[in-house]
Length: 257
Image 1 (cartoon, rainbow, N blue to C red):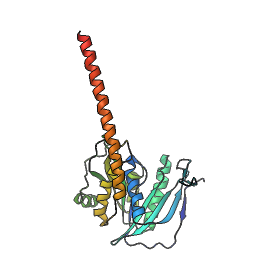
Image 2 (spheres, rainbow, N blue to C red; image 1 turned 180 degrees about the vertical axis):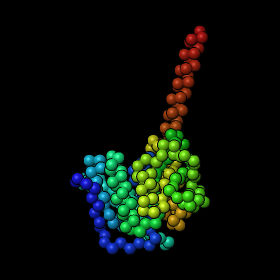
Image 3 (cartoon, one colour; image 1 turned 60 degrees about the horizontal axis):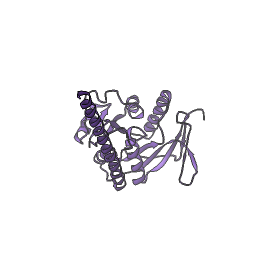
Image 4 (cartoon, rainbow, N blue to C red; image 1 turned 90 degrees about the horizontal axis):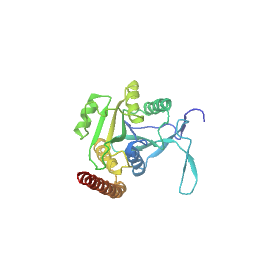
């Protein structure tokens, strides 16, 4: 494979005022968790497969020990008010050129399908293990910012400070060339672990935004399991800090003596 290949699985796709949701692997896998969950629970139909030499040289192994080449995929599903286009998959590009090439392809597909808005989904790293139920945003349109504020999305001047790297940020910039409004929604996450709790926060905003109900028990169970892991990590950290304090006091007393 010498160039990115898009395989069309369905012709003559007719959609009603579609919105594109993008959830690719990233910080805490927050966006990927949300899109994968929506694809499963809304029984979305796969319409495109995307293969690229900018993905890692890798195959994914199934439970049956069969393999598939890593790729990204586009699914579609119907809802009461509008249709959803869901972009998810195995990897983002490993190269800068690839990010722009794939980003351009994603935008072209969005324009072809008649997408009116794009929401990229990701995680905002806090560096703290404790969960904060907050979703931060950035957008390429001020009216979109006001709409999202009403739903509880937080917007902070010049945040994220280092910008938004990867597809979640790049698509906001590239979509301007097609006059498509776009926003990035970021669930707060430690940045250390896969974070289903942050994915729940993001899904709660999307449910209000899209006026949909999605069964979330599986995410809740994964979140509970993750909370136990985090609690153990916090306890281990506190114990380590206690040992370090005791050692420091002992050394100070030895010096005084």
